[in-house]
Image: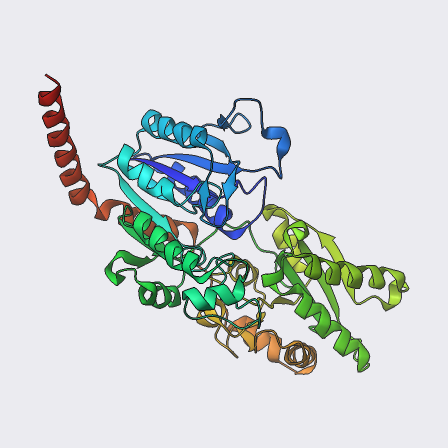
Length: 440
């Protein structure tokens, strides 16, 4: 079986959950003798040196079966490419690779219409789409977060979407929904990493039998044992420094604790992609870090370590006791939870979406109300001062899913459609024969 994995970015170019999962799946499938995986990951103008005149799809760094799709002219309003040449290149690539399965781990930078293009070019192939967020439903970056009031959104509608994006008329969102659903018809199966997503997608209009839960997973390097400490007062933030990840909420909590005179703790920030944050969020984070640097070293509570690679994670986790996940959106899965638990670290997380689904408050972590910096500050203080709390929560952690479990889950999805694929192939052959007869 040949499987083409279509990924938003390559994780070695731009870090992020969706591309990390796609690449982990690629690596896992590559270990199976009966599977030949091919990766097509997008690149955009954040890496301009990769773009050469006339190039549209190119190999990546000399690696076997790893290719880059050089995206450009992308329309984020309609989630489609404006380049006919890129569509032609993708079509040629599909014919050349001739996969049995085309698995889209995202359509952004490619185009939602590429799902239909793949179906037209490969009528007998199994086409799978994994929703790593809600971009099909939500035009506001797929986060289902009400921009004008900062509340979580449970339902899209033309008027509600217009309130978040007032520069676009309500009618456009009605047409956008039709556009999305039309191209999703080309897909045989939609998978989601969290079960709560099934309800939201089904309420939007996707048939529930087409929705399947497949967990995300990583092949993690060996964890380092937690150091014996009398105080468990070291916190860590890991991930992207963008608005919805909520680092600004964590920094506000630090400021509240400092203001009330509670200083017996430290926070280490590990992550990147601050350039993708809004100007307001980026300004708040940069201003806080600049002020922190002005303080004498002995009085600093926050240390910024910058970005990191996967193999560095165990050493970084070993420096902290708690992993704080203050996300402001639903969080479809949140790989950071898996990384923290693999390293034996309890988490302090937002009480919504995928985080609330995965974290059991008081068993393997602590939950606090979304976006509430005061509640987060109180939870951090409790984590530092309540005797036995860290040990109790650390003992309640279960090892997260292994990469093999994720690979097996997707193999089931790939193989479910064998009969359907055969029927499509027979139908396609019959149609080709009819066309051939007419031409003769």
